[in-house]
Image (tube, rainbow, N blue to C red):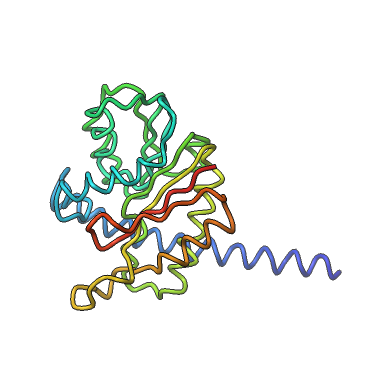
Length: 225
């Protein structure tokens, strides 16, 4: 009897957790659907100020890559700008899979990359399956009205997925709590870089780097396995 009760409790807790995650992702998807519809396939369409800062973020995130040829999941791929960045700089991609929870983003990415080599799209990491690396740019920023504690739980849950579905490492960026107070916005999440550095060291790898020196109000964490 006790075992059955425990199984029932765990099942309810898992359902409640998934329900929270789905509600969060529905809100995030709606936010980005509006952005891409308003601004199109531009840096503003994925909620960045300009292409220079967008590409500076790519530069930091791709420091996780050490192989000459690799398969990459671009989580929160938007309209596929990372793929274009990689091709222009002659990275050797054996496979690129863009993952995004926004249907509008995926539709735009598909339309722009119809005949591109080794280019794939997916709505989930699970569907994309294992790749060498995962990168995520900006996906942890827009919490909207979600409380910080539940947003942090959502973030760490995603990082665990990044770890599970990357064989060689992953990287991600976040807005920093060291941002100037007068420019901070209520609907954005400003993270403690030391918390996430510590979390990654304890849960994923001994080989973790924290980059907080590239002149944006954010940081990037690199996790290599």
